[in-house]
Image (tube, rainbow, N blue to C red; front, side, top):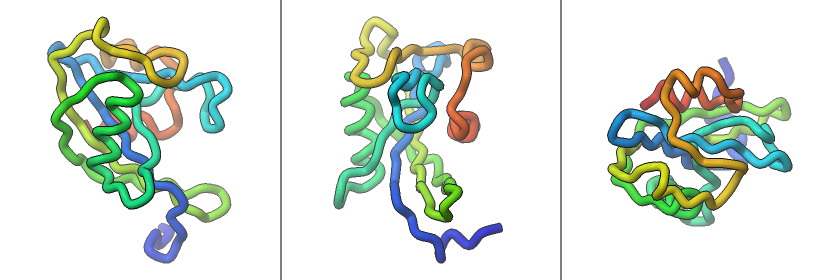
Length: 136
């Protein structure tokens, strides 16, 4: 196993696994022209801004991408090693909302929908999406 401490972390990303009151998970289908994994489904999230902590980034990204706010709880960190040896660090947060699909304002991607776990099993997920979902 690689020693992450010795590798260069090039990107830090906040991921939000948000569920509605009946347990569906908010998922985003990435744009077809997205640089990474176009057209695949993943929980919403995005890069941390300079000097921004992960919790602040998670709240900001949730609002920017969905128009929603929620109390979020940190679930942990996932490091993904790229082929070039650099690392993307993902900070995973979970939360629950009383909002529904009609309240979601899509700020990015092709679509943003609350999906059941069964529905999630029928879509093409981004490579690390299952890891994030398993942390919720």
